[in-house]
Image (cartoon, rainbow, N blue to C red; front, side):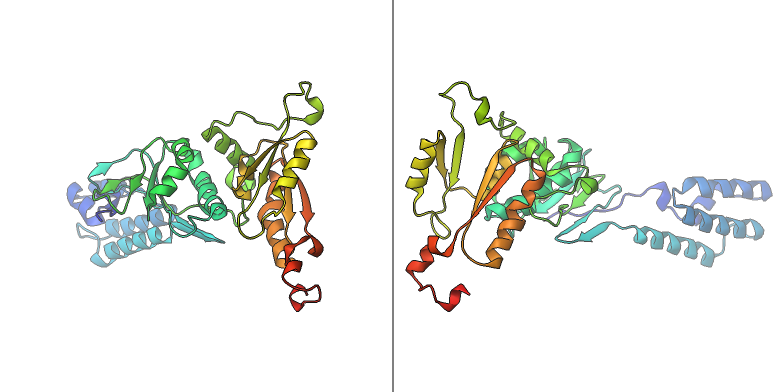
Amino acid sequence: MGWRWLPLATPSSATADDRIVQKNPVNATDDRNVQKTIVNATRISPQMAKVADNATKTLINDTSISPPKAEAEKLETRKVELEQEQPLCVSEARTEYCQPQGDIRCTKYHSIPAVIFSTAGYTGNHFHEFSDIVIPLFLTCRLFNGQVQLIITDKKSWWISKHQAFLKKLSNYEIIDIDRDDEVHCFSKVIIGLKRYHKELSIDPQKYSYSIKDFMEFLRSSYSLKRVGAIKIRDIGNKSKKPRLLILSRKTSRSFINTNQITKMAKGLGFRVIVHGAGLTNILFLPQNAIFIQVVPFGGMQVEWLATNDFARPLENMNIKYLEYKIRLEESTLIQQYPLDHMGYS
């Protein structure tokens, strides 16, 4: 794998001795020229400018042509220290990312920034794909308005295909597979890792300048979903236009055993019913003012905590109405397996 970043030689990386030799001062007037050359030739922080100024004063007061070797070494050492003090990486709850900047020597030059991320780990779990990869990708890349190069490690082709519409909306360029690319690429800015808000399916707009509603709008635009808001039943004049009810029915655990009865009842109330096996994460595709009904299975505090924090609370910022129904013990199929006095219910 041929990826590496190498700093290009720039005037600011030249040593004090190199600049002095170029000027070759021989009198006091030339010494002042040396001072000007040193200060102007280095693009450094105020702290480094002070160090350079002190070194120049030493040069002018000295009878030798070049500054003392120890002073020049001290200047270069302090310059390296200041460069190392810059916070290139950020580590927060459930996210780590780096933003190195500067020239990079390469075999292929890019005029756009790059974002490097992995599709390992949580891929394969629909909920975590959105919470830990898709939404963080939006947070990290949206500000570039398509002018960003996505670079993937641990690439999974099926994952790229699954989220292709979103990825094409996010970046105007073909994705680079870093594990199979042998070229040395040059970027002026590279973000390594993804920004992520620590709460599930949420974005803090004060921190990132985007909200979860901005993400949902971007997501609907990616898949050309034209309906922005849900229809209101009281405003329907045409009886042929019925509101839609989507029932998410699981196949194994926490599944409805009377889906047919639920469907029949909903149709009797005037709904057009759709039964689907997708996860609740797809609330992100719902139009504004839609109604989300979560049926919480019987399972104690842990199940209720997950239902609240993974879905109920995120909906508060999505402009989606939330209703909740908790399954009672006598409504659960658990009573068919264990008696009511079983210790597992406590």
